[in-house]
Length: 135
Image (cartoon, rainbow, N blue to C red; front, top):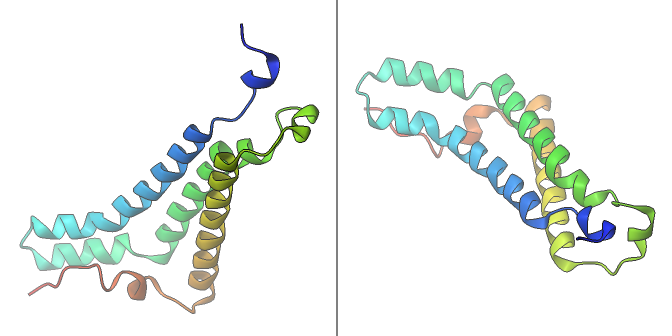
């Protein structure tokens, strides 16, 4: 039988897995038009897909959903104490490392959304180096 304090501890591995999953989702989302272009010769269809796929609104929605998922299932379980007595427990370096990695993800994506929303950066500039050249 487990003690009550160990049964409510957040799982560092689960939180790290959620963060890595969100990053993998964003990377896959960014790569999809390039993968599509490799298998199709229709340049206009590829350009239409890229113009739709990289529009700022869609980028904002994808980043916001990834942010909410990481916040709900990764950052908050690590940040909130499982019980008032757990605040006196010694800090665990793995938990702190994953927590601060999640915070860095939130700050970077929020900064990206602010730059995108303010017009300082547009989606075409963000993905210009990753798109395949169409001949």
